Image 1 (cartoon, rainbow, N blue to C red):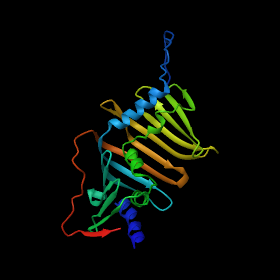
Image 2 (image 1 turned 180 degrees about the horizontal axis):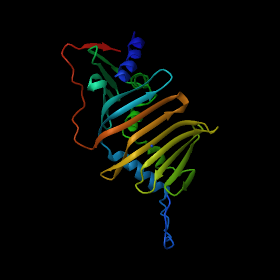
Image 3 (image 1 turned 45 degrees about the horizontal axis):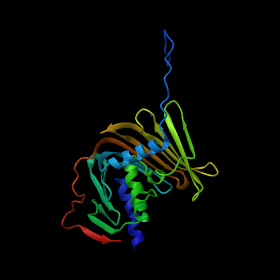
Image 4 (image 1 turned 135 degrees about the vertical axis):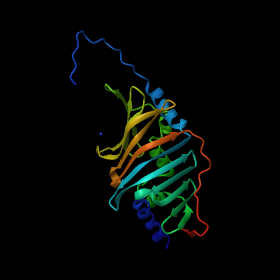
Length: 262
């Protein structure tokens, strides 16, 4: 019975990118090289500066089971809660979800049903059709990557090109290499990849249309490709607010809502 109810959730959720003349030689500009440990601390520090996040735009999911898109609103209050609302054509309410580290609520507006239960990775996969943990989901919506485990480690490779610093870390536990591309001008993360020992891409995330909020670069466009699981998540924000006062996140429910425990 629990499995059948969970399988309805994803259907409810989704139904709802010169030529220049010079009269004089260009001056030689010395490259600025930031030590990798400082670079990682800066990126992770920026992630931790985001305490609350609110945004709205379009979400799209592609997988073997389902492909679809919808308008959405999301609110994050770190470290404990995520609220997401899905809207259909003409702004019609379709669904509202509230997820914490321990439990979840999912309100199907059309059927006036509230699904509640304990939070685990399988529930998040049913809701969002991507295989994410709670913390990974929070980072995905705010356009960031958790680098806590890299703070005390030197990268196995550290390079730079004209536009970016590139850091790579090899993880012996999983025989995978994580690579991070960081823009030189504003130190924004623009690309994150996980590659296995056979050079196959396991995960690839791209971050674009980046704007600064109190010095913290945050992308308006996020594309996450879970290549190993044939799943893709696209977020395109039209509006966002960072570190505003956010009250405790909750769902507004009618008195006659039918509650279903999963």
